Image 1 (cartoon, rainbow, N blue to C red):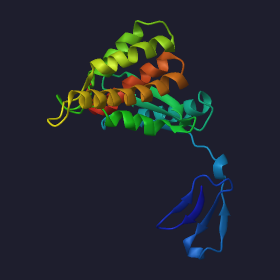
Image 2: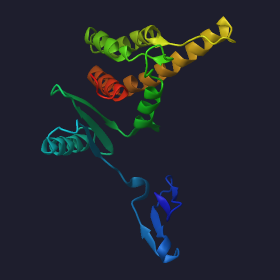
Image 3: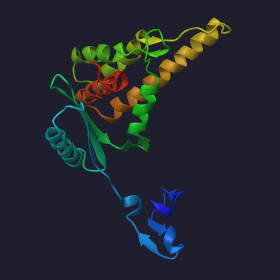
Image 4: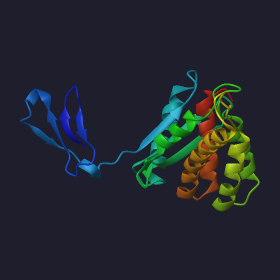
Length: 212
């Protein structure tokens, strides 16, 4: 990045020649940085508070190495160490085609219903979609063909009192189409179905707080 390093943190993320100006130097001392050539790889682990810390650190180092080796740096690998001993894992570049992966995952999670009968995508979608993919050949076109059907089946949107049927249908269709577009982004940019299956497991864990 480029900018002034003070309490307001004025940063220009698109600047090609990175620099930092420290406040205490009254803007006189310029410290060069890597600018837009800088990359960051991260290994992220989520585990129960009682999980062995040595194993958590080992898994974190392993995840960081995978981010660098498998995804060619500037990437992350997220590992979730479950109570059962199994590991849910998802890795990716931070962004594809200027679309930020973590932000897109967050947008999906915001549309998931946290309580029964609440508007949104049901948590049952993740396991149902996972099970359906297991029955299909490793082909992204087949996965995308059942995606919207599954989204329609597992999305609950209550009709408002002052809403016509046409308005309700339009609002529900838009809600489902937005989710369909976000999920399909992961499928089209990651062609192996195993990646998408891992994403479903990670999202399900994140949305229900690790209860399963």
